[in-house]
Image (tube, rainbow over all chains, first blue to last red; front, side):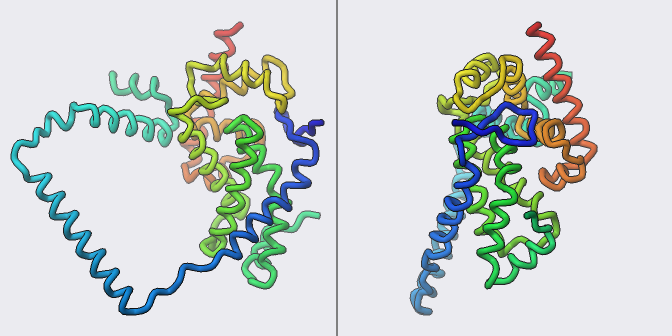
Length: 113
Length: 184
């Protein structure tokens, strides 16, 4: 049997007793979450090694990125027109569409003016 | 019995009363949050998942909530983000309700076949037309039209200016009207 969601002009319904049972279900999950052990505190020396390792990894990544940017043979024009660029352009239009509250047709019309 | 937000915040801030206070929050806000989520994701099963995740995120984020916005606005914002995240994750799959503007008729048909949808075909078409709007436009329309929420509160939920929201609502109304004009 179904119950209508009250105080609404909308036609959505829920299973019988849904809201009555919901609180207990949610609180069970909350209690499981609250009972989870906190992350263990590592000994001081281990944390120092961890930090050193993380710092080395960051330096290595920056060095590789710098090499990638500066390396000859990169074709910025190809980067801008390759498949990844198209994928990124579509993702950016999606973001703009969402945050500008316009759909894709609105944006394309604006761009083409 | 409803408890006012100020009292609830006081109870939530105290570790001794936090759990019981949160249970009251769940009881008090589950229906309005469910309605907002359900409008976005359309299926009851998805709405149930998102609603539970919303409350879990709220519980986890209680420590960071400083009370600068209303508790209800904060909860609505979490719910909106969770629902929008689910919708985005479905973009590349074949879900029951795909946010695809070209598939409005498909969405309406699936709604009519949904055991937890009690409306007629016109209501199904309306929901499908709303579902085809961009995320923020859709949310503004739903909160304004179905909840009669003030622009100031919608602004607090979405972090968008009232002027932009008014423009967005106007555009949404025009699109939905145009959709129905094309049908009949």
